[in-house]
Image (cartoon, rainbow, N blue to C red; front, side, top):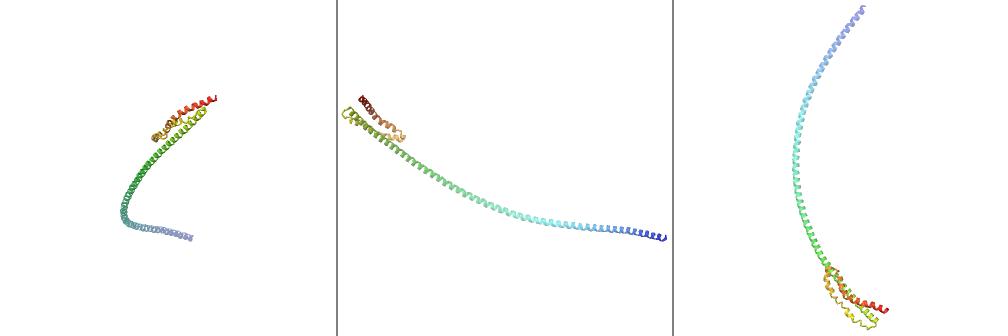
Length: 248
């Protein structure tokens, strides 16, 4: 039992020593970790501070360079805009001058074309008036010649009709005399019936016919027929009666 007790005592001492070593190791480890953490945190703080300082410096430098670049760009842009404005003003002035010149040229050309058109219209009107006057003269002359031809034709027809009526009346009177057995004295009245010397009156009616066309032709024919119809009617009546008596 003594040996067992010694072993147990030694084991207890070892366990106690191990416990103390473990506590010591834990304390040392905690202290080391704490020191390492504190060192890391301090280093990290220093690094972050350095980074922040560097960032601020870089940011300030960058802002300054950006400001300088921006100012330079704005200066260049202002100069470019000023040049563009000057060029635009010059171009506008040239465009205004070109428009003024083109407007003046167009105005002059339009005035010339209007004058030429006016002259052409005036010449056309004069030509139309002249042609109308010539045409009216020709139409008037043609109408007068036509009316004169109609009057002359009517006069010829009247003379032919009077001659035919006189010849026919002479033939009928000669036939009636032959029918009655009398001497052929019917040839004597022929000159009396040939009174239609009113033929020269036809040209007198011609001037009126010039204004009233062919309307005066009927009065001329009536005037020429009246002295002829009366003897014809007087001659025809006994002729109609003579054959009836002979037939009875």
